[in-house]
Image 1 (tube, rainbow, N blue to C red):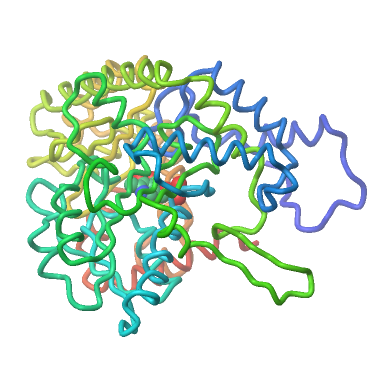
Image 2 (cartoon, rainbow, N blue to C red):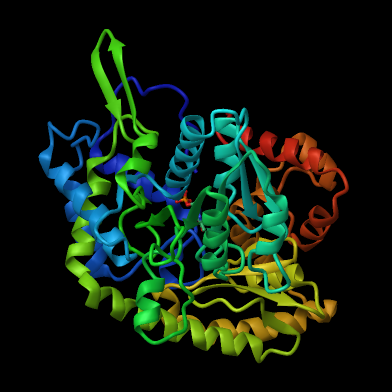
Length: 482
Ligand SMILES: Cc1ncc(COP(=O)(O)O)c(C=O)c1O
């Protein structure tokens, strides 16, 4: 590792030396190419990646902030939004925008609900939003940013939203109900038809978070797998978030926020006419909007078309079924709930699943740890096709090793591998980036512990969640501190 650079170099370096330094810097990054990583990266194939880079490069400098300057980007965005709307049964009347990701799309849906309430429910001082406990934290973030109240309702025993409980959680300040298709933690699709019917009955908005599923579930259904109704075909659904940079295989920085009609989208838009710099208008959170991401999304959707997406989805689903059946066949393990697509979670009723996760890390597999209930997370993609059997073999061995401490790999070679694996994901980064306070809490020295199971077990039961919250903020702050 070279010395940390804290000031602008007096003289620039050659291109070759800059690229070499960057190559060296990525040496310890998660290597997702070999299919051993189960989150963060969605890659179709080299052909798709090549086109994405070409398209991104072509529009690398262009800025989607001003559509009159770049009619090309305006066209791409309009067509991408229309293609997604039609895929999701919008009937030609949906309106929306591209954003930089799922979080921004959800922020927009929440802001729109707040603004809609200000216009239509002026007596509501602080709008409330009712979501299942499995909904993505982007909803908490939006509530935090926009001073709304988020009411999380426990999911049912099938891990799907409990609509009767959501009904009970509503009051006169409720403006929006949310369901996921599917939820990130367990990959199950909430009963969207029931949530939307409740929204319609109470005359409030209904958002479907299809960030993960919007570009996958339609193809999964076409392939003949059972998929519950989840999109604009369901009366009462008023908005949807759909990520293109997940199962749409677009370059990172591409999502769509869609509304049932343009009247609702209107609440999302921002304009000020009093600025010295002129009239300023912007449809989403960001000012400058990356032309490359917009162009690359259009390119990949146009290139793959329905048939291309179907072929990729078919392969991903074959691998998913192979993994699901193989995991369920391992004594003590089960896939939780009934996930209809390629996102799922592994639980154990018999063993400590975090120990199993550690054993998998030691064997070079990287699975996010989840809580409530403790599970290991899997997002299956194309890269896993070639490694499904090896994964299942290692998983079976990991279960045995987790049961018998004498079989656990704790040797130095294994420890290094585990530590490298542990450093790669946010929950695991809690381990790698321990600050003084957190290392005191966890009894460490600030270095990488070899195993994280004990810590996850403890975090799940920590009585004072407030401490944990501060600890995580400490850690987040430390990431960019020298
Ligand atoms: C269901 C769901 N919603 C929203 C998001 C947020 O997406 P992003 O990370 O692109 O902001 C995710 C990310 O995994 C997700 O799984």
